[in-house]
Amino acid sequence: MSFTAVHPAPLRLCRSQLFVPCNRPALFEKAASGPADVLSLDLEDSVAPDDKPQARLNLIQGLRDVDFGDKAISVRINGLDTAWCYRDIIDILEQGGERLDLIMIPKVGTAADVYAIDMLVTQVEMAVGRKKPIRLEVLIESAMGLENIDKIAGASPRLDALHFGAADFAASMGMRTTNIGGPNPDYVILTDPDEEGSRQSHWQDVWHYPMMRMVAAARMHGLRPIDGPFGNYGDPEGFKAQSRRSAIMGCEGKWAIHPSQVALANEIFTPPAEEVAKAQRIVREMKKGHGAGMGAVALDGGLIDAASIKQAEGIVRQMRMIRAAEKAQKPGKSVKVPPSRKTRKSKAK
Ligand code: COA
Ligand code: MG
Picture 1 (tube, rainbow, N blue to C red):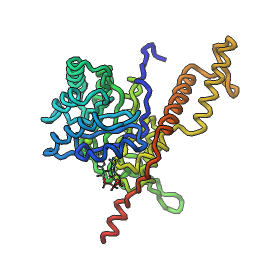
Picture 2: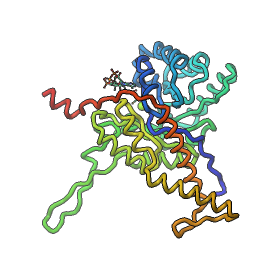
Picture 3: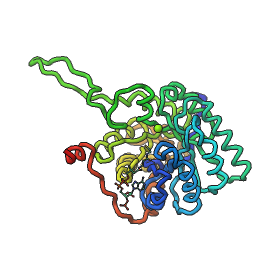
Picture 4: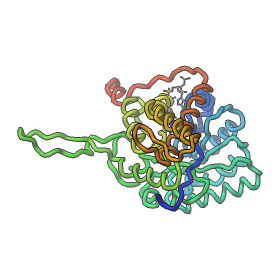
């Protein structure tokens, strides 16, 4: 272990992060009563330029009036290269009360971008006497953002999470992609011919490198890595496969761009039952061991080290939060999965 300590961001649930465009304020209540862990109230790309000022007003009203329960509330502001960014921060923090938890900065390219937002947030917080400091989420979605990711991830003590945005990233890189955040049938390797001369084509994950890079940078700075959107919300199996892959890489959650994706993300990013049972056993054995004056504890014939104890405690705490969130969840109506893009196309023919 390095002598340099990593201080993890405070624990919170973020299995599913539902995006809600602020030009549709009627969706705020619906999103608030659903099972998403985090709501991302969006002022950026889901809102047309002419609607920006009204969307900001809707958001401020929503932050004051809607009962969001225990959910973490995040606002995706407009980027630093737009005419709306400064006023997003100033108006929301001056007029939106204390309910907001997080600000997501889109299209971050350098550490200075985070510094600039931190400076502005700090000033407004001081001016209004805000009690709960805003935490920041960064959206990595450009070649520049990825290349500068280590510096970005260490740019402010307010930082909480790094997110990967596949669509803008692909555009910035000049990639050829199909479904946002999904696989591409042309990104394959062809096996050598076997004895009969037949060859197999294996799909590869075109998002693997930037996402692994993001997970490493996030973990190095104690931040949570979150996977971004999966565009074809009519394809729940596709969404689950991509989510499972992200969870295996170390991501703590995934965006939902339609409410039908929320339950799927919650399912995939809830630690598996065996993992939870093992974590509970580790915590129990550790308590017993410490009670008996033993520093090191054995489990299943092996020694439990400090890292596995920390991880086990984290899982147990996370499960407690998940159970509390499920208990607080009002029984709502389930949201239908719309037909997938392919089905819709074939119906239109
Ligand atoms: N939050 C809360 N509720 C939502 C919702 C959202 N983001 N999107 C849809 N709903 C509700 C609808 O109002 C509808 O409710 P109802 O049954 O009471 O009428 C139900 O869920 C089913 O919605 P559906 O008709 O299938 O979707 P839609 O056509 O209204 O909207 C989208 C589809 C994609 C436009 C919408 O989900 C959306 O705006 N998503 C977020 C997009 C976004 O922010 N993108 C930026 C990040 S990539
Ligand atoms: Mg984007």
